[in-house]
Image (cartoon, rainbow, N blue to C red; front, side, top):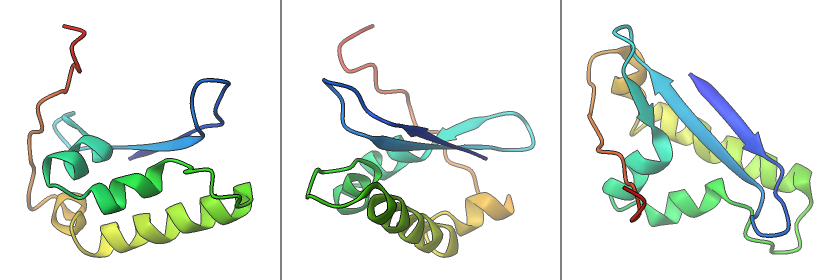
Length: 94
């Protein structure tokens, strides 16, 4: 598993990315997984929404949500008993 943090720039807000790789080398983008499953409420926690919170508060909130995902929706994927192929969303760039 890889968890990445982008500190943001003039045009982009700080955000996290999470990728899970299975034993066969297949990758799962957790943000795309959440999008496909209609979990916009959780997906929003991956991006700092600029609600005047500190970086520390944003990181803590994200890690809390991620921990909850590991114990629920992503548990079987992390244990290797389930895998889901999520098509890559090119967002008009293909």
